[in-house]
Image (cartoon, rainbow, N blue to C red):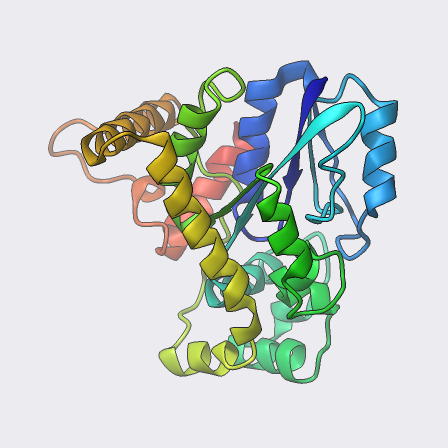
Length: 289
């Protein structure tokens, strides 16, 4: 039986970067399915048919996937890999993404963050899946039901991790599956331009409407902690692997952006990602590459 890895791509949770990594590690066995309708997801039976009918597919990324997957498929060992994000930071990232996504007309382009939060979180001017990672991962059951997510994790076939600890997760996955994922070093992709500051008051306003999402984020934290404890035999082993991984990421980054000479001014693209100019320049350079 072949192994099939399904990248459950939660929007605005680091999925674009992970897509690049899946493409590099699986080559011709990777299928990148870009869904234009993020709120329409595949059913359990849909995914079963995809796995059965396309034996060349060893890995697939899609917004249409949930964690309701055929882990006990008769033709393949199905695994899922999924990253979730702090609900507040994810909502803010989505605001900036749509605010600067010129190809599509979005209310974020003509609203302040508070107005956008009021429209989406209070007036519900959006599909519930968009702002609820739980709703997304349980296939649209509701925004609080963790049963499908917990059952998926209990199969032992799901890597559910927090995007804020992406380096740790990648180093851990490399250790756990060295043949499948030989190199997960990366350069960030699809970084949203931040052209305004979000106040603490506006963050608190959004937070009160996003608290239902924290259980899945906390579960992802625990899952990564448990995986790290299994993958590395000591704290020193863990730290050494993480340092080595970050070094490979740095060298990969420098392939795109050569390091500056001593005393040379720091270029715009190398500044902190929170700097609007840095994010914009970074995005423009990546699009050219």
